[in-house]
Image 1 (cartoon, rainbow, N blue to C red):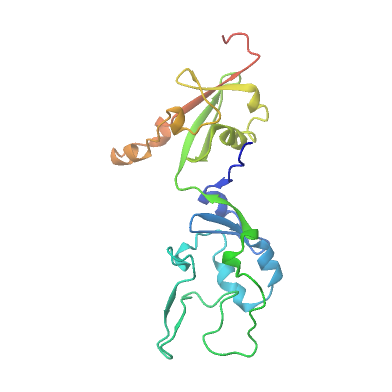
Image 2: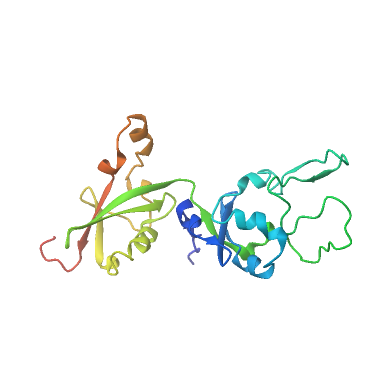
Length: 217
């Protein structure tokens, strides 16, 4: 029985979800769709910091060890309270006793996996894909953690029949169940940076060969 792989997202993919009607954030390596939260608390002043963070990474809001909201010492009371430099937000209690505050919401949103949509890629890279049948070239950004079938899924919007092609690199058939690195397609971004080279001109190139093309053995 195969285990379902998590969905990986690039920071650029997260960043386009930046409105109250479509709001994603990432933190501590995961991606969350907070659109339902925004709908539930629409008009609440405590939603403002979340709206301001739409499409961004908010890992700095959290203690990476405890996965909890960062805390600090309140200079007035000396008590330890959540650290919210951008303002208190949804599910954060007030710093002082407040009769209007209720904690009957269950799990706070940052611990509620119902908002979780996937994993934020730790490293993205660009690759060039050339369709040898049409000579069409396309440069796409992919997640280094993705296997080739997932990269194929990304490419489908440029070629709906991509699955009908054999994917090759350096004349070798690619294993579609492995990542680029596992297929010996190294990520050379760091070398390009160190040498001040334009990596767009030297992108790793994958060639697609149509399976019904009789000119290919």
